Length: 111
Length: 111
DNA sequence: GATGTCTACCTCACATGGTGATGTAGACAG
DNA sequence: CTGTCTACATCACCATGTGAGGTAGACATC
Image (cartoon, rainbow over all chains, first blue to last red; front, side, top):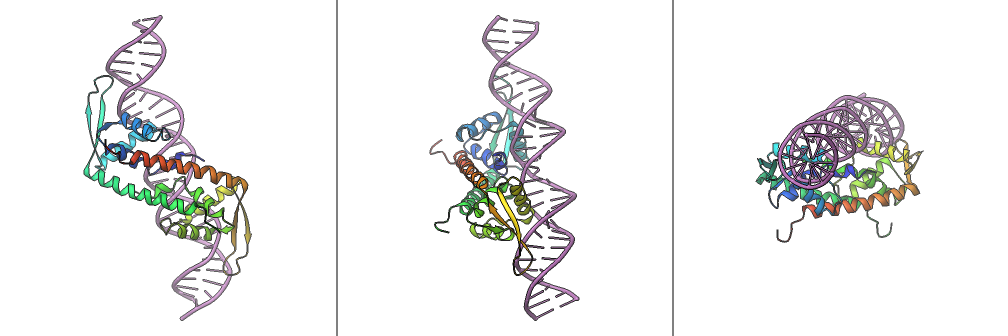
């Protein structure tokens, strides 16, 4: 019923996916994901920040505080080499999973 | 890291996907999903049976005990009209979600 | 100078639901 | 009588998303 559960297991992929194209800070990551998905995925702050912390702890991301000029300070995230490897692995995993779901749910030509 | 979390939110879709092509019992549902996915998805009994119970309670499935000839009795499941509607809705939802993930993680032509 | 609204970060109680182990039982083989 | 396959089921555990709440800076408006 919920689209919510679909997110599980893909949050790291989404974050790494936007960060592999350049350094961004948290709030901006959320915007990028929202934009690129055509507003279909709206990152909740409740999982975004915890997920960023997890990825940093696992060494997939490196972070640094920086002044944002206007407004509050920002925490910028940059993807590491390990993070890029994680992204590639998870991306392949996701593609195969998606393929599998499609295989299972597809209409057989004639049953 | 886990492929495990990817399953969340897709189990109903997988089950309804194989049942829309005909009546099956639980054990058989697991086999079908395994086969159709090229063994990539291996339904654990820990989620399969609870998921079947959920779907039955929600009216998406109708079930009946029947003798299996050889071996223990089997519980056969048949998809209802409501279940078919659920399948169609979730299938569309899934496709859009998958599309979104691909959009977010895709390589931009030139950044 | 108090209120409102952005940006920007963070945390937490709660609920969902998959994982892996374990249990029961029938049928059949060796 | 032990093992293996079918066939169903349940449970403690854990990961993680949801939704709400909190802090704080900057700026506008009245």
